[in-house]
Length: 83
Image (tube, rainbow, N blue to C red; front, side):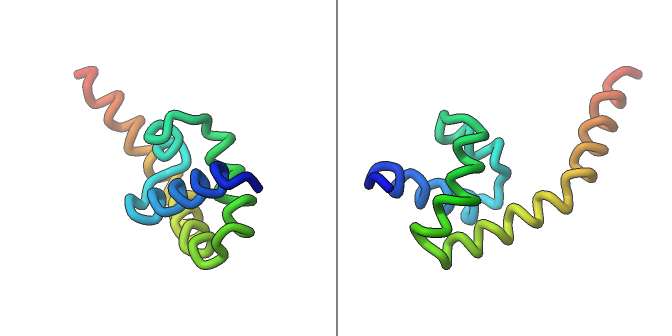
């Protein structure tokens, strides 16, 4: 892996762990695509920093388990503004 890619991957992982954010939010923060962030933190990070990979995996698993709740809250907010 090129050095600049490895640096980017580690920065993305550290950001996700520090903020507890989603892949989408990390993509916006780093101005890159969601697909790139996802590939970076689910595949490339494993070889770059195994310990950080495990922490990121925990955050992503938590986000996945809460996704349906956030979607419901967004829908509720959307329609509560129509009264």
